[in-house]
Length: 232
Image 1 (cartoon, one colour):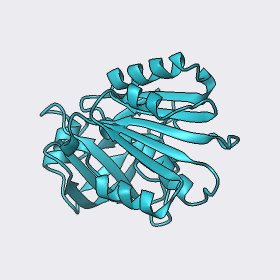
Image 2 (cartoon, one colour):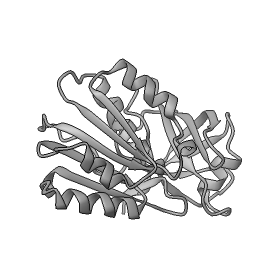
Image 3 (cartoon, helix red, strand yellow):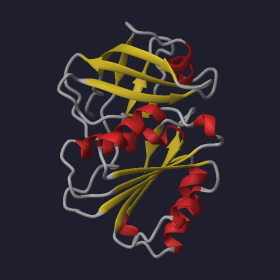
Image 4 (tube, helix red, strand yellow):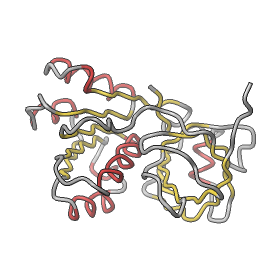
């Protein structure tokens, strides 16, 4: 059986983006071989021998810097330690990248991202990848939160939209499935859904009702004790 691989990473920044959400960056000592949209298991010094999955919020960079979005969950969990105790200079251990929420290299269709909570992270990573070469594909990012004050990372996303006219951001505190339907038609788009299970189920059901082919939909739900990692 192959031994697990780990990548040590030094925490560079740690910023509160709400009462229970942080965005932090870290740099691995050696390159982490991942694709935008994937996730890794993280072990932090304040919860030794415990791990939880978290999605990278950026595409691979030459400087090896990674961004993560974390919402605190169980007080005894990894996510709570990352939110409440992590600080610049700490060392994390990152596991082998996993997950299939990646861009289809053969598709030239426009894209729709439907996200909730820290399910924003993999969508942001994919948009980061697209921003490096996209010139022809229109992208819609739908975000759902419980109230207007919960839209963390608003400034960063608005800057992306200002720089790239092909990116449209729609925020809603109502039913995101209805918001997506209202902005259609979507007969020639690829869809990526990430967030709480209830939101994923609602959005997936709405797309099925709109007769979007299942092959064009990738749906991922948040798992783990705090819900930042994504699994198929």
